[in-house]
Length: 314
Length: 258
Image 1 (cartoon, rainbow over the protein chains, first blue to last red):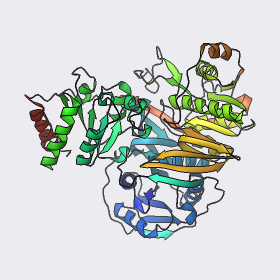
Image 2 (cartoon, rainbow over the protein chains, first blue to last red):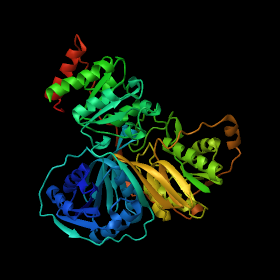
Image 3 (cartoon, helix red, strand yellow):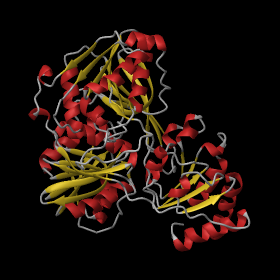
Image 4 (cartoon, rainbow over the protein chains, first blue to last red):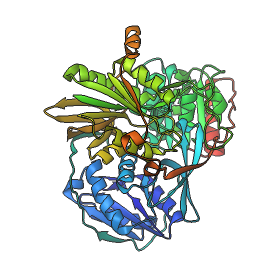
């Protein structure tokens, strides 16, 4: 069976989750195809062959330079109609989640979002996904084709498997597209929370909007900065930094929680991290029961000391 | 401006969730239910737009009769009326709900639909964009700012690494993200008034659908609780320095994550 992976790229650079999706797709299908949408991306697309894409379909058009959900859905739905894959896999980024939702409605296809595992049972796709902000995991069967599945970033390991990966240009039927991107403010080099290997988060214990100690530690580790809901509600950090049930779910290799007590909503959003460190002055804070390593102490002393120690050791 | 808000009633986020005996649903006894937090932001934004441009705000919900509690709360905040579509015993997935909502609103006057970007129970991120698709409307997700003028809506939405500004002609569907606004509380007079506001309940048949036409394509095979983390190890030491040195050593040599 054929599995189609829809790649996500920014200026010709693929998101890591695209490679993770290609790797996961290989466990599902005998033939993995990749679809890249964008403008001037033909050369970059060849890279996907390294992760096992047997065929790399490229829809290259000026009108696809910026992602808009209507143009991308029109083009992808047309190509899916021709390829007729058993499954369509997308990275569960902000864009991927919206794109897969609209696509599922266009194709009248089953969809599972932000999945943490995916496999075949007979000829049916079975996916595992978290619900209630991570408090429950549901195993769901997607009946009908194509099964549209978005995969949570940082959950699947990307492994190379070089294939001939022929790049093939395909027609981009833009059709009726009414949304237009007017501007973008992207911090170049900023590591996204959901894709970061390491996340350093601050909570109410920060006591104010000065997150410089957290940022210094994050810099030393090449980590992204997160925040608890309290820190966002206080206006110390933007909503896009929030980790938890009403924010983002993250699964980095290392999550360092500083001055975060560990409300159930926060724990739900970070419990799938591989290693958790908690730094808090309250020894009774619930966060310690989930942390692999805890230090009870004043974060304003401990966090800078950790930063210094890491700089010494790296 | 005719504004529709897609609203779902969900268990409050502080709830402990336990799996029911059937293995495919959750125990609902004793759960406290609220408006989905992102939908609450959607109600607030719709009210602000109405205050600015005039018109009416209608909340539309798919769910059991109990969901009218959440709809009354939205009306107490200021929404004008509500439509509940009760699918009865029909098992729905995200796409089923989108089909029901689209069928319920397609004949209604509508300039703007506002939805939460996801419901915090199913976390499926599907219904908003799917409703827009079924109605043939432009949509955008994760909106933190919007502005309406000359029959167009411009919005700022969060994406990985920053924000983008997007524009589309009305009618359109936007889905909310935290940061768009701070939802108001229902006032006591608001709560009294809400009791008298029109709230209509419809069945699938009333909106021209049947169980087959909205049958779920995603079937829950089983629910499970994620493995409990074995935490609780505190690093002891005489000084901050010794504790920190031990932590970094453990992260490097034992956990091998730095």
